Image (cartoon, rainbow, N blue to C red):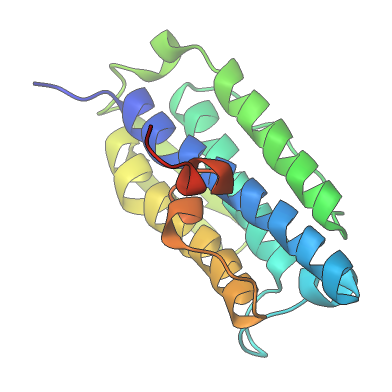
Length: 177
């Protein structure tokens, strides 16, 4: 059985983005309930040399939206990295999902061996599409989503693994009939 690039990306990325958005909504509610300035949480980081929560979300978003566009041979849409609130970060995630879902499946699948040149300010990397998705995008995406989640947990937000996996708190708490 063959698994497609689009399927790997969608089944891995979209639930994590849903979970991240849910975690950010919970963080915003937690800050309001406990009288915490949400700006402190949005700019929180695990270590002085690590990016803050907002940047972790932005980078996860960039990997999520960029992967299919690059594989499809399309220009990657830019999103300004200007988010400073939980609401703005959730909106960025929603826009990322919309951009991800806008890429035609047929433009992605079957391009596993297509060569990609990915340029960063610090250098250029060459990949096949499959290696790019599986060996570059997915580890980077998971790193930044996990780090965002870990920042929130470190600050005291009571999140469980199901939220990370993309299940809403309501789904987790629902009791079987």
